[in-house]
Length: 130
Length: 130
Length: 130
Length: 130
Image (cartoon, rainbow over all chains, first blue to last red; front, side, top):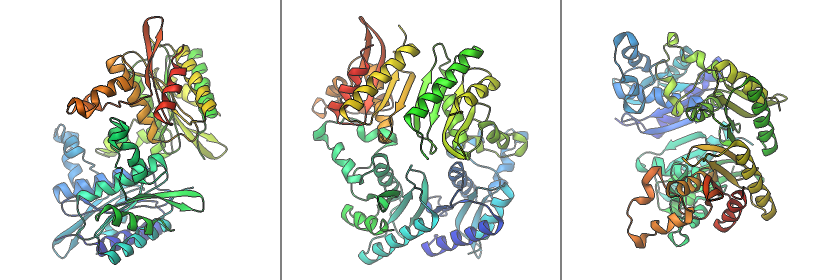
């Protein structure tokens, strides 16, 4: 299945609403299941450095079809996965990247950055409920 | 002045409306006046290759504070500006990138790709009327 | 607000004076508030490898609107922010990148490299007093 | 011989004076004879896209120890030097990059962008008279 424009906007707005509710200025990226950019918004006063982090989290979730922090577990130096963090142009392995599902199908990935990892996760989760 | 979220969504929607009206599936990029990504949408069925073209047009307009096709005039081989097209990570010098003005101030840049250059320009212009 | 040429030279000279005073050969980068290069000087005998470090510190400060070492706290492996250090083309999260303020407005970012992190911070701070 | 800080500032100021005289807002890059950045200034209101062009012109002059437009002659498609323009990270082969000489020695390279190629050349030449 494919991300559609209507869902993408819906995800952005749901994420924005949650971000406003918890007082975070977030960057929000929506990728399609193949990792191509579908939609993006940078909320006012969000960090410029979080643009790329939001994209990296969504991309990381997409590459392994799991939450970005689940990929992060593989990146823990204790696992001696030397260099894995640099693959595919750079992985971002902490909270904020999650699959967007419709039933059992992944229809998109959302990546959020701007607050703490826990806040970013909360915002991304809100955006993933399509 | 700075692009704000409300204006950015307004630009996207106006561009989408025009694209629908003329039957084009477009990629639409909104950059702030310094070139950082503010908003993006890929309409359903728009070419994946046009994601980067839309970004390149908006960036090119931003770098020289003029329409992307006006920058393109400098890139014409007749002018022997060898290599200029590759500067700043690559310029994209044809129609579809325009400044978004509020009065005399440039508040954003919009880049569109998906149709013909003339169609892209028409969509970008529609999106630039904030 | 925007960095201007006069301020940029003033920042460079103030940083150079401090560097001479404490015996450091420094690279000094001035970025505008959006991260575009405004001014740069490499003092005689300064390390070539410090050119990019000075730019990276200023860019890192700009991306998160805080000192580079404050960004560095987020990069501490204890925080498990795997891959964050590689985002936005690479962050540089130790002392030497600071905002340049005029009143409450950030008008530029300065990044310094050449001495110890503490020396670089001292030089950057001297350059930030416009 | 090596570029020194005093000469680098002198070059910048001479170039700025000429740019002001002829009404151009220029980006001015000073590279040492090995191509490493020595000094840079972006005059107020200069195009952001000209930052990289000024650097590219100076780099191109440095790589072949001649004016950037002299390198440009080799890039003319009539010469069938396919791909040469993309070498060394990208050449920029039009007016505005010139060697800075002290007697017969090249002590630096200056690259200028912001006006027409002829204006950029005039500014670069003014900056090259150390």
